[in-house]
Structures are given as C-alpha cells and as structure tokens.
Image (cartoon, rainbow, N blue to C red; front, top):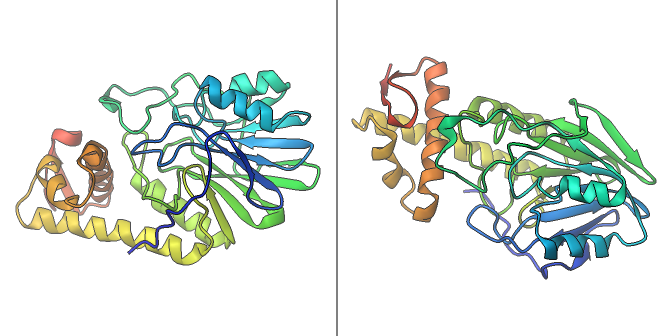
Length: 295
C-alpha cells in the first residue's frame, strides 16, 4: 500500500510559507487529475524562482502577482507541458522580466485523443532549454534540474540544495499515483526516473498537486512496488485469457473512480508496451485496440 498524504490546509490564492525557503500559492483548478489544484512554488526571498505557474486564470494570475509584489522573479521553471502547469509561465515571466526554463512540448500525437488528464499545452516552448544537472541559483537558493521522463517525455524535477528537497511536479505525488500515457509517457522511462530520484536521498518531495512527502525513500519504494504489482496483475489477466486492455480495466481498477478509467487504460497500455519490449508479451495490432497474449 502506498502511504498517501492527502491532508492539506490551504486557501485558494493565499500565499503560504511552507518551509524556510518555499512559499506556495494554489490555483482554483481542482479535479480528478489535479486534486485540490495546481500548487505554485516560490523559492527564495527578494530574488526568486517560480515553479509551475499553472493555468492561465485571471484570479490565479492576480494572486501570484500579489504574492510576488516588490520582488524580482529571476527564473520561471516548468516541470512539463500539461495545461495545469505551463500556460501561465510566459505571461508571468513577461510581467516580471524573467525567462522561462524547461523542456519544450513534444509534437502532438493523433493517438493522444481523447484528451486525458488536463491535456497538453502543445505550444509550450521555454526561453531556456534545460539539460540534466543544470544549476540555477539566486540569493540563498540553488536549484538543480533533474530530467525525469516517464509521465511525459519532457518532465523535469528541481532539487533545492539548501533544503535537500525536490519539486517533483507530477513525477511523484503524495495524494495519488501518476498517469503514464503513451506515446509521450513511457513506463520504462518512468521506472528509471523513480530509481534516479530515490538514489538522491531527498528529505522532502514537493509535488505540484497536494501535500509534501516527508518520508521519501519508503514512499518511492511503495510507488515502485505498486507499479510492479500492477504489472503482475496484467500478466495474470493475460494468463486468465483476457486479451484486450478494455476487458482488463474494470477489474484491475474496480476501486478507482470510473472517470479515471480512460486514463487507467493508458497506464495499462504503458505497462503492456514495456512488457512487449521486454519480450514477455506479444501484440496483434497497435495500442489500446490491440490483442495481447503472453509470449
């Protein structure tokens, strides 16, 4: 069982000091994929970085400008291109004379329809393209870019050196597991990125949605164990004669909100594609409509 952390005290638009170096403002965009909404992090005092500015909502934009009044924004950082993370990045950067840092959105895929999660900001292009290990700094704070593909191909987390903390975007969330949606999302990359984060030994994870994770290593272990258990369930379903993802999802996700079943089907697909790559499963056809069997 994943030890989810779901308690979160907040008010929409309020700027809360959540650690010595970190403030947070939560946008009013709650939903099945965003939990209470997008949590925007402000790092530092006076000269600051802003992480995942969130949706382009007037109310939210005004709340951020109020929280940042009298300060200089030096960096606007984006973990990935989904619509609950990146759309306000360039308007905020322009308002404060800053640049946007991240990785560009991948080319859209026809197979991404119907829209899942919050959808993709396919036009997102940062001013500065980050590489793994790039360091960004300001007075009293140091952030390192850690590329973590899996949820999306352009996902980047940001490590805060002074607090041994990681802004984990949607890569690891305290309230829920992460959806992996092929073809941009990749399960093999996701497993590798989880191990990459675990190896760093962070004290705290600050996801873009929900509360922080304080007991990091056991939480990441549980995240990995959950994915491996789901993989085993898929193999068992194949052995029982279920050959399509559509047939598997209702039983595999019986306790999950049915609104999430389309996204769950894509996570099953991500597992299935990885099993095919490993030679454990063979496919007749492509994607969600294919028939699968054990090799």
